Length: 163
Length: 132
Image (cartoon, rainbow over all chains, first blue to last red; front, side):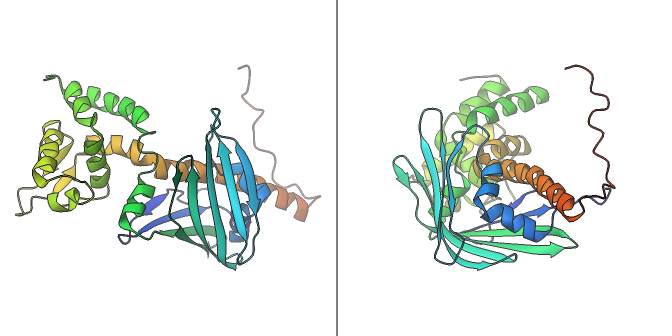
């Protein structure tokens, strides 16, 4: 396989309210679509390596709800929950979603995912639309503090290399 | 005041406002006014933070335009990528796991479609695997 697909994740901000992601997958789009919308599949890949998923429910129909919960070893739960607005298998899915954490519930944002067939591989384009720039930026920077320690370590290496 | 470059860098990064400024600049260059917008701070206060960041070599400020655009230095960009990361890293890691899982699904599907024809020999996994 020399004609590998470029699996780089690209994230852009097309407007003040939006985040756009594109990513190629080396699989037909019905598989990618199903892997992202079926609980037994979603369980296998969505989440953080350190956090077990404790709830994974999907009612895949327009108006149907879904809920994903992860629990940290200390018992802190993070939940993504939403409602499907549009489902066109295997082309497109639109839903509204919010993030729930102890002491924090985000405003709702809308997510549109399109699955384009590129010679048997799939290009996923996801657009996340927030109701304000502050919320958009907050989403983009989520984990900013959690990631600081490893970033410091990397920075230390880079700076040491410059000296 | 710390004098070695590493301490200067770390001191500059110790402040959450300055980290937020870097995170914003990782998205592209911008003016001081625009940078100041999300913060409940005066322009002079923001300018002070910018000076610290500039002194630490984490950002540079253009001379070409009157609005002196701020941009992130390549060194800082690497670090910011790590913590801006929350979002990027989350999806990057997840999509990498999804890649592996899709390979499994494809293999299952192929096995179902053609149960008797096994043209693809299992990957040479057992080869060259001595002891751990």
